[in-house]
Length: 272
Image (tube, rainbow, N blue to C red; front, side):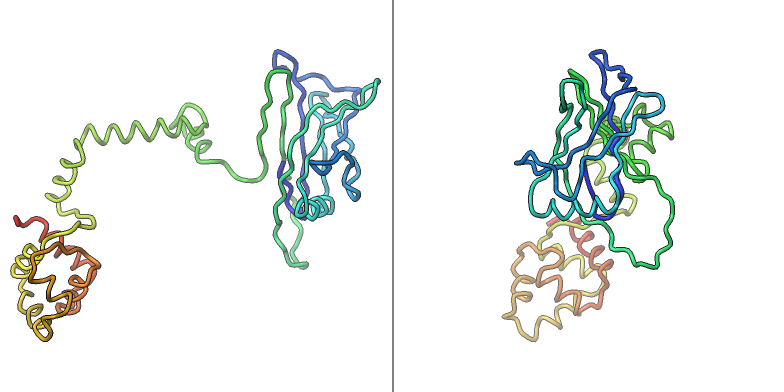
């Protein structure tokens, strides 16, 4: 259960039978105990919270106030905390469920903020002899899986359904365009290029000749032929965007980032 400083919290508990059906809790009494994980005594400032049985008797709720949440948060910064769901049975208290408490800082809102009524964050637990289902609920908005489910795109609001949906889309795309090499060729043919890889300085020189800026680079690099950029330009070694040669070429030609991208893409298409 997550407790945020200053934020009221509700815990709704359902006790299921062996078949998974919710038991009727009418006439029963429950309390919620917050205690140090390594201890048995409740936190001094947090008395056991009495449970409220739902009108239909199928669940019990515990409301933690904002002040209590702040006290739990402060205690949780110093030690590990747990909570116990305790049933007051005729033979004595019976712990039906125990779990850890996680604390988080809440927002430090200005005092002049106008209070508004919002849905309380709610933790719901379902306890049964053979299964436990824990879900965190509240005013968090619908998840991506829930939105896709409500739109009729997937068959259930689960991560697996979302993964299967996009895997099918990827497979359909691969069926249409083929493997990665075919896709790259297709994109090149229609003029769509991503960030090109390394090219040889020979390919770069030929590309510069084609676009008419070769002499500008020669003039810029000839002032000091001992620089790394000049040596790389003449050595025939690999060059890529972002290295010393590409930076020198960009400065000499005044090209933009997009134009440099196009220059290296054109160089990559030249046979070395």
